[in-house]
Length: 77
Image (cartoon, rainbow, N blue to C red; front, side):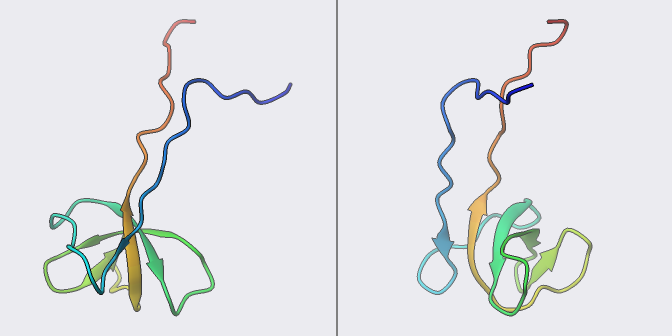
């Protein structure tokens, strides 16, 4: 079965931690850690540090972005 896209693609806007604002505390966002082999993580800003979704202090985070909302799902279709 071929995959198909429904709706318009979402644009992810990356925000630099060095020159821009930080997200509201405790809100999950995408983060880019400079000292990780993984390109993108889920984490949050606690007001002083970046924390991964697993609850560990994140390494050096260079950018963050809001998590996309994802596709609309029609129930019962």
